[in-house]
Each structure stands twice: as structure tokens, then as C-alpha cells.
Image 1: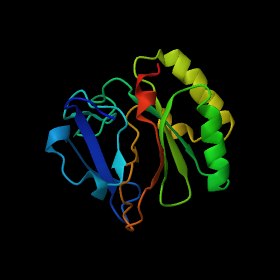
Image 2: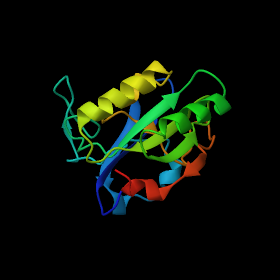
Image 3: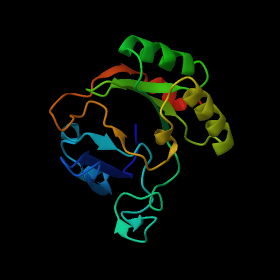
Image 4: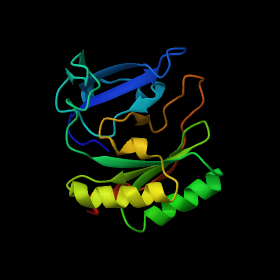
Length: 170
């Protein structure tokens, strides 16, 4: 999913902290036990730290996020079967690498986007949002569910579909 040794930003929600996260950025070869984490930025980081919009240094910022590698589509409304059907529909127009269940109510599709023009990806994402996807995952630095990771409550974020061949279909 992330060839070489890129910087990966990984995190987990802090219980009772209103969406705040405990997160770290380090080279892929320094990470151990990624399955214990619940969140990952789906694009490699360009630097270990960057500045937040408020000017604070952090390991999880848009400023420190590198070029887009994956575009994630998340569906919350409907059943898992309906989410899967929507992801398969979107896969007609972009290479889907994996689909996972969040361990809660949503399905997430990871679509390979590296090297694609942002305007093309934005049109695709607008279409995904029009059929029910969450628009929050448009941001390159948005945390997404870690494939086969664990939520804070221990529930596994199960990967139901994985197609590594899609990594070369752009």
C-alpha cells in the first residue's frame, strides 16, 4: 500500500476528548503493531511535523502531508450491503484497492489516486458525495480507518476486499 519507507501518520481517538487524537508520524519501518491503531492518513507525509491552521506545530497537519496516494470514500447511511454496492459502482470509475468495515456502521473504500490530476479526483469525489459518501475524506490529511486496525472499543476494522493489482491501474 505504501512502497518504500515513507512517513506514515497514525493515530487513535482519545476517549472523551471530543474528536481529539493521539497521533504520531514516523517512517514505515519504525512502526510495529499497526493493527493496534485505528486511524491512518491515507497519503504519506512529506515531513514529520507541520503547522496547523492555528500555527501550532503538529505531526498531523495538511502542511506536512505529501501528495495524495489514496482517496477514501466512506458511507454511513444505509446497510453494509448498500455501502458495498455503492463502492462497487464507484470502482467502475476509479481503481478500488480495498474496502473495509469500520467496526461501527460505515464502509470505507480506498481508491488509488496517486498521480491523478486533482480536478479529475475532485469531480469523482463530488459524484461520490452526491450518492451519499462523506465529503470529509477529501482532505489529504483526513484520518481514515486503519485497514485491519482496531477501534478504541476493540472492534476490528475488517478488510472485506483487497486488490493490490489496482495499485498499477492509473
